Image: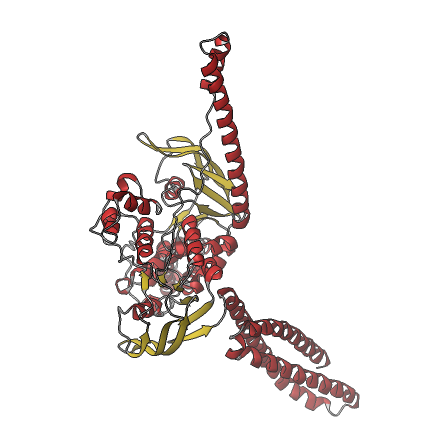
Length: 640
């Protein structure tokens, strides 16, 4: 079923053209990744689809009764006082109907034999509507979404909106959108306030929906796992691709190459024609030259294809090499009153390492970075950074960008010997040119502030870089440029991020901050993901095994009584022996499962890549042992 159809759509504001010739069709169940550089028109496209903006040209058709949800960027939760009320906003009328049904039921019970047909008819009509609109599943749906986004559904019923941080309010706004019934979801950077665990949940939730989804995101791992269509907004138009993210990247490269060839071929042809016209316009072949001039004037010109020239160009270079021992933490304790975020942390970071620091929102990652930078004193222990090491900090709140200064002054104040041309050249590599360098930093958008923060960070020429969620406001092309710069950096990096693609590409070591302690994994993020998956698999099998054993014990208790009555019958002796043999096989299989589970549950098993590989093999052995145990249960059940 077609939900939205765009044909030749364009948007103009006065003489300024924002979008032109946009054509694509969205069908129910499709999952679209919407890509494009910051300011390319992605949000404008969303405003068109939701009806907030009318196209200046072309046609845009929405299916009748289309239910579209979009996250409120201003996080206005109306009269809702609690987290649960805000998340359940779409069901407010349905819950009011539920209360009305309860009141009607009480009145009918009190009326007894005097219940009127009108009362029964109204109750039946309201109950049918309540069932049709999913009333019985509404509360469970809200609970599931809140739990997936990191909230306790029970506590959320009393947790006030006023008590939330900015990031938590963002997650509530996302929960409200995801819980609401919809045919089409428009999601604009939903992962900005999510951690790794909630991002993985969102990925699975979106894939399970029957509705269509259009997702603006810079998270390449999410795009790879989620999208089966791509809409690429570039050069004031949007190009649809029936492909996942990886296939889109390849197809885009091929399309750009073809466009470049066509552009250069046309430019060469025009140059030859113009040369002929110049040489012959006043000579014997003037008639032919005039004819060619007319044809050339009517020729539609191809514009230069978009390239990589205006992509941010980050250069991270250390002024000094520094020592091999970069940072030493000993017994570090971080707490806010009685709340302990970290206790007994000790580690040594060596030159050249890229440490990925991951953990849930609120676990203390940002606070730990502030301890490393000296902005905060730990409640216990110490952090030592040698004098040969210089540290530069990319803050998540971008507070390092001076709001009152112009972009030009912010750079010139750090490089007093630079000429005006050098300052402008530096800013130009980060996408700021012309009069834009005279803007105050306080007027910049989130993406522009992020690029300015990187422009300032480059000037530090530090040999230890601490990044706190550097991808939050960057587009995909800028993230790829940053990834390349960090990969080429000849120094040490501590990287806090929920961007799985970035972590997979760069990290050589992983710190997992969880429940007040850090697990130090000496391998890449991808290896850590594999180890985590094996441990999760072992935990699931253990839970299934525990449930199976519980059922078997219950059945054994029932069958013991049955066996007592059957002992007098001689023909049961053979069956008893077979039953005993089956129980022995169950015991053997249980022992094998327990042995493998104990090995997989050992944390030391996952501290080396070799251990992770062994765990992978043990995972397969565990599956085989589990199947053998299930077969033994089936045999025992038949004999019983």
